[in-house]
Image (cartoon, rainbow, N blue to C red; front, side, top):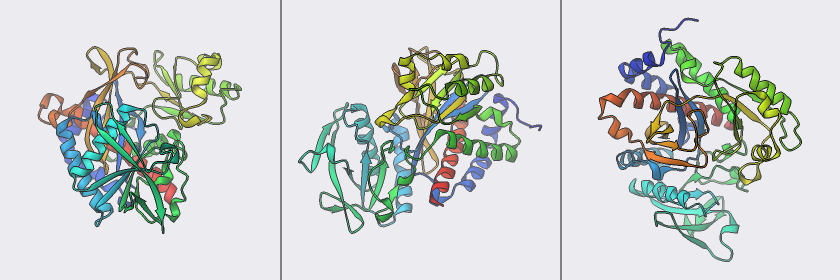
Length: 405
């Protein structure tokens, strides 16, 4: 098939010249009932393409957004929350249970502030009784010295309460790698994102399959070569790194994908349910998978909350051309209700341009979309990242739709 847009430069020009029509098209594809309240998308830009490499439906990192973007995020939160629950006044936020991560607590503090500034009362609450011992609340201090109080949550007559106060709407900031032990079908309090779609149910393999569908439709609509906007991938199931079961099949899948790519390309082997940068190996051949030592296999075997990784995503490595202070970098774009509200750059001095930057040594640098809009030299970059992030979040709506229907 022939396309009118076949290079990254062509795509940059097309996006900036057709910004409104592109976003009108994407807007038309979102469905209110299946759009996650927020998301974040990790994006890599190489010499030849710009592609998402991960999508998070329960994002942390709001503390890394710049002040101008946070102002816009507050506006979008206000309209979105009122759309979900017009009468809501008290919003409950259910966080992760790893409360010793002080940077994650910074994220909670900022998320809470955004929603408070949108005009709501905010309570942090949890159903994890292990957090509370014999108390009703847990008081914490974040890395930046913000006070965080988490209240013990309970359900009465199908409604969620904390501090003897009725919660009107719950925002989940817990990716449910370890699912919260609640029969959500019996809960009448609105919960967003939908609690049936955490990492206990999600698969990166499934997400990128849906992203492929979204990009194919988008490419046909605007005559864009879809290879400009996605990393090639395949999936392998029933692998056990501990017993080495399936490693030869996994290695063959790596080699089969590699022959479709330039010779110097790396391959990312990712746990399909992995999060926080866990369960990732970057290899040059299938032989590196087959001959993994025990230490490397252990890192690929089990992830957060002791999830055993048996389903793998084999993904084309997108070598980043972005740098920050001479460090290779990638962009994370944050969205609320499918609208891009800001982002940051993740840089890592311990990795090469084709490495996994979401690992030890990473640092975050603010990437202000609001400021970039004022700088015409960077406008194309901001627009491209936003379009790709919106397409990735559109793919997540298909995940939600599949679970709920």
